[in-house]
Image (tube, rainbow, N blue to C red; front, top):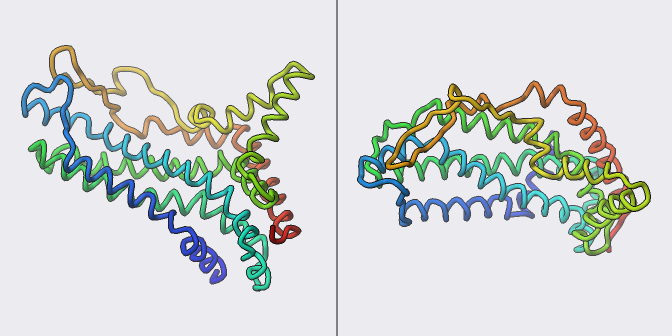
Length: 298
């Protein structure tokens, strides 16, 4: 347990961007809410602005969460590609191999950092940012602090959404993370190109020689958000699931009654694609561990 804690601490010491990026990004959003304009199309007076702010509270909080999540996904991808490669490039791998720490523990610590700890850090910063922005916008729009921006059920929905996304994306994107770790442990240079070219070459070869697109279809479903959304989330159309608020002439806002209705935990867990991908991811992680054992400095 102590070894795992120190390995995680090492990642935070060596990669300050884990918390610096969300801190700076959250600060920019807070400054935007503090000094930026909040003009809303269709809002003709303060009463209408107040209505828009309260009606669109859930949408606004979800947008903040989604924005943080996109930034986190970009950083996590870069981190996975660089974490094992950087050790070999700066030759710190020689020091760590001299320590009584297995390569398995090292690789797993980096995997957990990318898939669990980094999302949790962004989750915390997104929460703080949302709270401060909600307070600032409430004051600027003269909205009641006890209004919909501060409803406990709305807040809990955002927390549930974040934690659900962290858990399900960690499983769904496990093969992607395993592949990036394997490339990071193997490549001597141009890790980004090596992470892209082999899958692309396989997809093109299948298309040219077999006339099929199985690999391309799998990659698109696994890497793109559409594949994840179709398994982990569900769209619930119908008036019973949405609230429509008129805010002016021919203008309205539609907000979901509850975010819980979009979660599809049962479908995600019961999907064969989920666990086939997880099995492939585990195999790639084992491959990354073996490459880490055999590779030394660049």
